[in-house]
Image 1 (cartoon, rainbow, N blue to C red):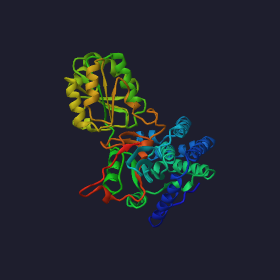
Image 2 (cartoon, one colour):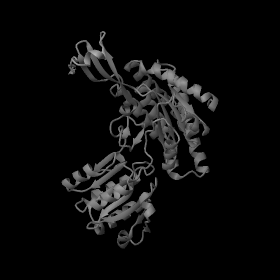
Image 3 (spheres, rainbow, N blue to C red):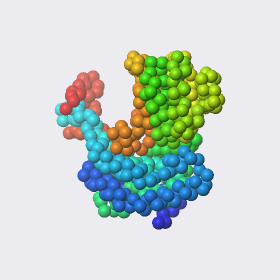
Image 4 (cartoon, one colour):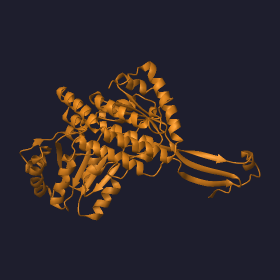
Length: 435
């Protein structure tokens, strides 16, 4: 198929069209929005061969272009990943409706009431590198939460994204949801224009490399939700189950090394390092992982590469793991405070008190005890899917599902009530009674 090409002259019109469609979507019933998600899931299943073939074309071209292997891994959308994405769409349909929930219902005075109700954000601008399955996740969450979405995938995923959007549009055309709520941009030049459309776009969510996300953050006045780095750590304490620690570390590094929640730096207590590292090294080497260690690590594993200061600040996105020996849990937490990206941090220990201290004190969106960092994921958390992971302090934080795509409004209803009544020398008091 040939996608319609937008230009800066028409992108504003497209964004306005999306906003109008989003306003229509926002007032549809839960059933109508869920029916649209079911139609999308069905259509994606019916067009599996076409979608996988389009993605295979992208993957072949990416390999020929010499795109980094980590990006190639994110780009791949085979039948297994597609089926998982379809299951995610169905899961989103099953989630409670996030729109119209009453958060506050309060009497201010007799006949004067206040309600706070959840409502959609409006129009989301999603800019992502590779990851065509992200398009599916984001679209399903946007429709469920009543938001329009303007998508801009990386050029390496162009065929995949065009095919997915075509399938989604055809599915929505058979429902009450206007297909215009989902739009796809296809050229790099449109990114800068999108970032300037603050009258139509309410939230930008970038998914990509550190430099890519920082570029987005620095070039728009639209609020940005996301994370720039995924430098995740595991601290292996002296009171640890060695075999369990080996398997957790291997899973955290190799289960999907291109993911932002894969471990990049391993911190090992000095007392356990001589026993632990010789067990870990062959298990990782068997999986193709290159280890880079500090001086203390290389005294135990002299065959591995030397780590530099730069390694502590690097998100590899591949089969490389930096290793550092530390004197204590406090030293590990200090290292994480200095080099961590507030994404996901884990402690492996049988010391429950120490584990709780770690969980309480480490500043990250996800803090884990005795499990893989790869669990930092919206689907695994039961969110159905996620639009991305946020490492900012203000909510939403961590994997962002439906709750991150709604805001709220205050509704006040009276019967001729005046503010003057409640001010001055003899003001009438408010009742402020929760209903």
